[in-house]
Length: 364
Image 1: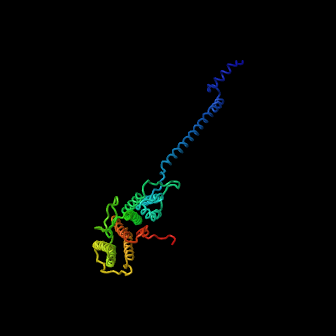
Image 2: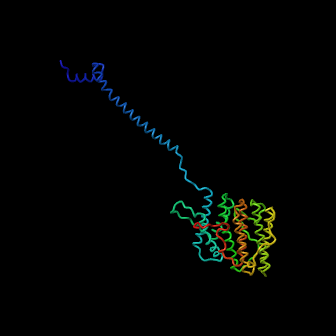
Image 3: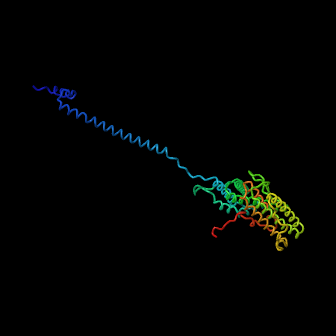
């Protein structure tokens, strides 16, 4: 007897729900069919888990690699380069003021004449002004030409005294000396233009430099070697003899000025010979040609040449001593150049752009 449709349907459902009620073969087939989706799910889960672990490892590995990488180190200039760059910027400020300078007083005209000859040469010797990008503009300070020159003088001499680099000390002491002379001589020219009578034949010294103070012309102690000191003592003694000879052949004010300058050189010679502390190498007389001391013009030319030569020798000796020695050597060089500038016939072209330094022609 056939079962009703709903009974067969109910049994089929019962058979599906109760696998124990079916035959073993059918049960194995049914179980196999039921287990296939489960394995697929487990494999899918393993694949997903593997992808997740791989992604996490890659992420952590990437973070770890970035954490261990050192940050980039950009090159930075050393103190010597910074000092040179600062000096170049000071010289640039002078050139900028010269470019916009208009007619002015005797002081500004003289200062402009002297600085026009040297400022650009100084800037070139220092390598120019550094700019990070070609399109960057170099700032120009709002200041007078005199202020720019004073800043350049003070900055150059301070670095020259304190730097441990002998080459930079030589260059900046020469530059500082040039600016010191330019400022001083501009005041002299202004006084002469105003009709002020100047005292000639005395000693002339650098002004007190901010941060350095007043330098002596002959120090109490020094690291400059004894023979160099004695050489300077002899040079001053030769100058003493020249002025003594000029005085003997002169009259009036020229005679008085020559004697005054003779006394200055004699005192300096004695002080340096004492400081040297070695056997005195000075002579009683020296060779002087008659032509060099005959007539006011020849006398002035000979005296100027001698003073300028002495100034250049001092400037060239700056790096032979310690920092403090550099300042008194610059002062001694300044004194000689100043004395030459007060002698008849002096022109600003006689003062070098780099006193004490021989500038070589690269093309030659």
